[in-house]
Amino acid sequence: SDTEPRPAKMMRRLCVAVSALATATAFLAPTTPVLRRAPAESTLPRSLFGGAPPAPEPTPPGGGKTMNIPGLGSVSEEEMKLAMEFRNKMGERMAAIVVESTALGGKVKVSYDGSGSPLKVEISDDALKEGDAAISSAVVEAAKKAQQDSIVKMKQTMMSMQQEIAQQMQQQMGK
Image (cartoon, rainbow, N blue to C red; front, side):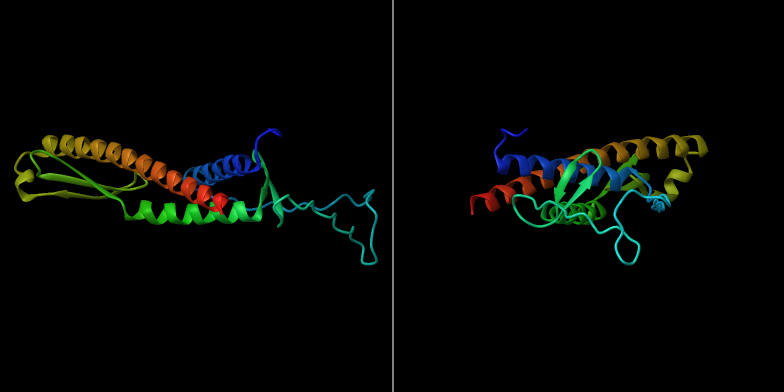
């Protein structure tokens, strides 16, 4: 809102941008941009070489360029840079997470990464003696548990990183 102080407004926008980037990175497949030509009879003024002169971009209160992101509105270059740094750090931390779960008395072990994707399944020689049905249900049991633990760890890591970025923002605003 317009009555919101500038630091709080910037913090809110950054949190929304970071959340949107994290969500987009985690759940959306990359897409190819679609290029469209302007209509042949444009009402825009034309320059010597046939293109319309670029419209001047409004300068944000803090300076720097802005970009318009659907659903977020105008985001400054600095805010976008911080969001990209956050996304890269998040990716590094998620890649470093490995969650393991066991079943059948430790004879079956399943590992998941920080994104909730399976990494490996280990079945000991002793587990083979238990039979196909026991091994199958043990793998499913261990996989479900590892995936649940992975999701919990992912949420904890995301919350921790959001707290870190909030502290950084507060420190930068205090300067």
